[in-house]
Image (cartoon, rainbow, N blue to C red):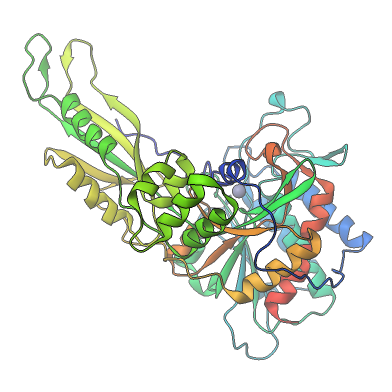
Amino acid sequence: MAFQAQPYNGDMTRTLFPALLAAVTWAACLSCPMFAQTPLPTASAADRELARSILKELIEINTTDTPRGNVTTATAAMRKRLLDAGFAPQDVQLLGPDPRKENLVVRMRAEGTPRQKPVLFLCHMDVVEALKSDWSTDPFQLVEKDGYYYGRGTQDMKDGDAALVTTFLRLHREGYKPKRDLILALTADEEGGRFDGAQWLVEQHRELVDAAFVINPDAGGVELRDGKAVVAAVEATEKVYSDFQVTAVNRGGHSSLPRPDNAIYELTAALNKLAAYTFPFELNEVTRAFFSKLAGQETGETAVDMRAILANPPDMAAAARLIAEPSFNSNFRTTCVATRLNAGVANNALPQTAQAIVNCRIFPGHSPEGIRKQLIGIFADDKLTVKYVSDAGEVSGTAPELKAIDPPAPIAEVFGPLTRLTQDIWPGIPETTVMENGASDSIYFAQAGIPCYGYSAIALELDDDRAHGRDERLPVDSYWKSLDFFYSFAKALGGE
Ligand SMILES: [Zn+2]
């Protein structure tokens, strides 16, 4: 029996930040000692009301990957708002591989002939299932209570969807003409489902979403502790998610007559080799900068070890000490781990099949097919097969050759305004770039060679991450700040 693939991206954000914050108290932003305080334009009461009404409309449309959910209802509603505001029909395209999973691609065109490639804002519209019986409020109603908006998607990520739609409407109304095209893609099936809109758009309609870089508000953001902003994290690269199915087969027989050949023993022997194996230590521009910054904040042996891994050649003994923290280990290398097992059909029969799923998180610069071949080498048993399992659960003999790009050093045209606006809103907050150990839709663009940056501009208490959980909520004040951030950020990226 084939294994069901786990839905992609079920665990995408914040697999690194809590460990980071537990380990560190940041002192000050190193790269920005003086902040020119220009007053940030804030949204008018009317624009806040518009943003609230869009958020309400989106929360109240069920976009789960269930019989009750329909992404197209939400993307079509946003298309109507944009058309009503005067966007040209050819610049507001609704398209997708399934009638219930249509994506919306909005283009705000540059004046004249742009010299630079577009900027893409990538936002998923689907949400994880939520049951009314589990919640204190109806998850598919926007409820305002005690300074919070409650509802499924208020954190992940209808807040970002609504903030960007509001931003595009506002810029259009004000007659803003960017110097390069600004694109907003509102997509299906990031959380699960068979029709990931980001992947489909970049693979099937590259011309619609091609960009110099991607801004994805589904990751990163500002962490608060007791109301104080402690770090602004920007996701600057992420690992590639891949599942592999490892299978041993045998002619089986009666369990009263065991033989040395046995599918379960062959499979478990291979998995034990994997357990003992460590993928090579690696660094890239993002993780190098991350550990270098972290070393400046740490003390004692940890700080010494962090500097030692940055040396050339890196100190492997120091790396071995640091991996006691699992998020550091995952930031150092590709990881592959057995996550599921299935074998045999009867207590009194020799197993004819033994099968495992090995889940890999691949370091940028390596392809799933390269890792599949590496697994075959680690197992070193030609009786086993190692197949790739796609996000849709299809099993194939080879895996994709696509690699996530080795991330470039932070791009000044992104980080200049990102840092400036973040400092305007949360003065003095330290900022860091991270490599996410999980995955978001950014990975499809990274695999297409486009740098991606994850930043929500949403400030949340460290212990109030309720994405995918019950009573998901967004501080209203955080929503207004993200609205102000994205308005000025879009203008800065588009050219004033
Ligand atoms: Zn999300």
